[in-house]
Length: 247
Image (cartoon, rainbow, N blue to C red; front, side, top):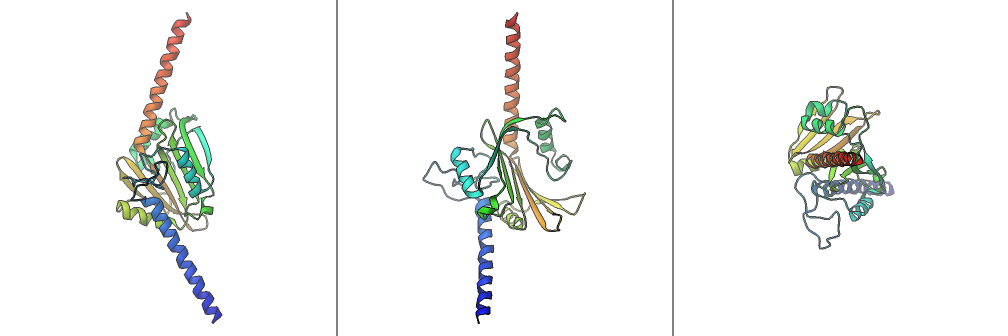
């Protein structure tokens, strides 16, 4: 009897664990459908249209409170400022072949080719989020240093990634599919208001499935490029003025 009782307890624990993962994924990717009375709350906002992660969408702005709440949900972060921004994903030539507009943005971000081009961005990296019992191995969130709005989100998951796909499918409909030419892998993608969400499914070296989710907030990337080009022009004009006054 004690053996049967222990088996029942183990089965019940397993069911509750799976249900917990499902609920977490739904909350993270589907967003909340209510507003909060606390205007300082960074993550519990009225659900946004478009693609979101922890209710962070195309119009969100990074604040100190938001960063604190992200730490609560994803664990400690590492931060980088003024660094390159590369939109490449999966393998060299992927976005060039399947996402022409993203490829054009990427070329502008990394011009001239072969040089290290730094941008006014804020990159938050979470390497220990699994300690917070969320279904992510690694999370990288990139924001504009000018507007504080999101530019690029990268999320890596193991087997729990299948639940992420189902959640996004329920919210945004059926995706389009890209079958990779190089190896047995595929990418699913959704497009909305120029933003693109891509989930790539492949296998690790042990043959286990792994999922890589990327959200490109293309309108905000375009704004970053416009602002940087504007700043560069103003700097050139200032240099010319100083050159004229020197003699």
